[in-house]
Structures are given as structure tokens and as C-alpha cells.
Length: 239
Image: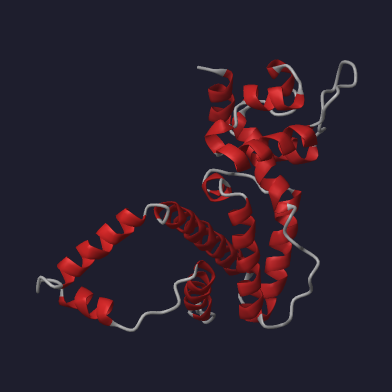
């Protein structure tokens, strides 16, 4: 078992990660910091994807020996937690709620989508993260304040925020995949021909009717806004 595997099996201790010291406790003052390590890891992930983020690659980016990084981030799981919270610091947290909780939730979702599109690795990372760092907690605080007028209890509000974040992450992952597929016009044309043939075979009347319906705006922004509206406007506050 490697060092990363052994540490990952134990999991990240959030109290130690977020409330403990941010650098080595002994030795001479290093030429880099946990912040620099995190920034380098984020830059790698933005440019090449999450698989490119290894302790060795990050160490080379900050000009450090790979073993020295373990004093700041003992494994990739911990580094990922640091990366997620770092980019979460880009989310604004000081805007006061308007009192219209549905509108405020939609604003929050659009902010999350923009963040995830800037950092395409983020939707995948969110599915495995386990802790809430200070930046994430600050944005959660904003969301919970926005939800107060809904009159739900705290547990329900936490569930709604988790549901919203999961929706945005899933939708952005789909957006990114669709954008990649659009780079191949032949593939898109082949899929359209296939669906037209299936709709015309007489065995899929519901699909045929759906495909014959008037189209809606298909820009990524319009599609996201439409889907988001269905989600938030359909939330039941009577439970």
C-alpha cells in the first residue's frame, strides 16, 4: 500500500486540516507555502485535468522536493480538499438575501455553474470531497441565509443546498461533455439521423411526438436556466 492509499483509507481529518497549522512545525522556513502548493495544483487541473495532479507534478511546479510536500498535504485526497476550498473562495459571500428565496437560490446556482465552468475538474472533485473548508462554509452560510424565508427547518435547508449543488455539478459535467462532442460535427449529424430513424419506425410514438414539438433555445445558458427553474420552482416547502 502506498503512502497516499494508506492515508486515503483513513480519510481526511477536517479539524486538523482546517484548524491546524498550515506549514511544517519544525525545520527552517520553506521557500513555499500551502497556498502556493494549492494554487499550483489548481493550475495543473485547470490546464490538464485532475489526473494530471500528482504530488510529483505539483512539487516540480513550486520547485520543491516531493517529500517536502507531505508536510503540507500528506496525500492527494487532502490536496483535493485544499483545491476545492481554494476555488470556492471565488464565490461571493457578502451579498445580502433579497427575501425571495427562490430567486436567491437561482443566483447561487448560476454562480456555482460559472465557477465550475472556470474549473472543469470541479464537478468530479465535488463527488469525492468530504470536508467543508472556510470558503465553502462561507458560501453555505450565504445559501442558508437565503433559504430562511422558505420557513423550512435547518436539516431541510442543508438538503436543498446539497441537492442544488449536485444538480449544478451534474449539469456542468454534461455541458462539458456536450461541448466536447460538438467538436465532431459528423458525430452530431449521425446521432440526429439515428433519432429520426427511431422516431419514424412506429415503435416509439411518445419519442416521435416529443421530437416533433417546437424547439426551445438550446444555448448552454438558456438550457441551464430552464432546467434550474423547473428544479427550484418545484421545491415543496410544505414537508
